[in-house]
Length: 67
Image 1 (cartoon, one colour):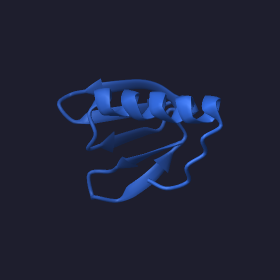
Image 2 (cartoon, rainbow, N blue to C red):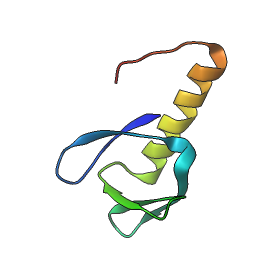
Image 3 (tube, rainbow, N blue to C red):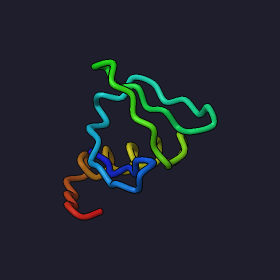
Image 4 (cartoon, one colour):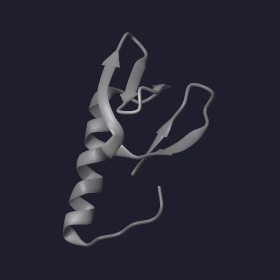
């Protein structure tokens, strides 16, 4: 799971396994497999980086529960 920031500056924890698509229109719109859409401040590249970092930590057994 990764932290992302909604447009109202609320930080949420997003289950990255539910991400179906990410579009920049110019806002970043994340569509989940449930059909729900989130508009976030982070770019698609930043979301991808956070997902990769998270998965690498899980793979390496380095569980970090902070931001």
